[in-house]
Length: 132
Picture 1 (cartoon, rainbow, N blue to C red):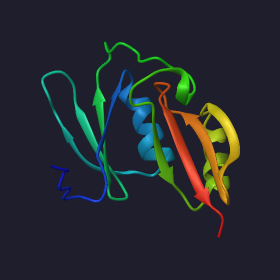
Picture 2 (picture 1 turned 45 degrees about the vertical axis):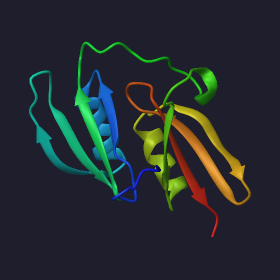
Picture 3 (picture 1 turned 180 degrees about the horizontal axis):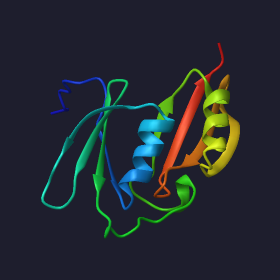
Picture 4 (picture 1 turned 90 degrees about the vertical axis):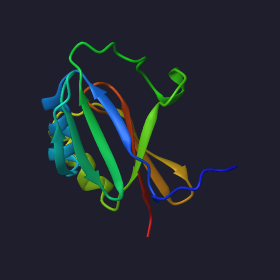
């Protein structure tokens, strides 16, 4: 039987070794809205709203790093995609903040541009913008 989804978006959990750097990236640079902080025995869980998506940042300073690199460099969940309407301005802000641009803007589909950046833990974040 297929899943009977009750929400039109998924929630994303990101384990981070530096919660402050991740909050600066997801909250301050990308503008995701803080919802709440859940104190857990093994570190806080920060919940941020991103459109209809919930981003869950899990503080875990002793976590083992996942394989890094481009999307096809390892198996498993490798990247998250956000559709935006202001890629040029967003990219300017990310560059000014010193965010690593993994792949400069390129046409991924007709009339659709993509850019790949790294979050503070090296996770791949893709932004897509469709030409109007």
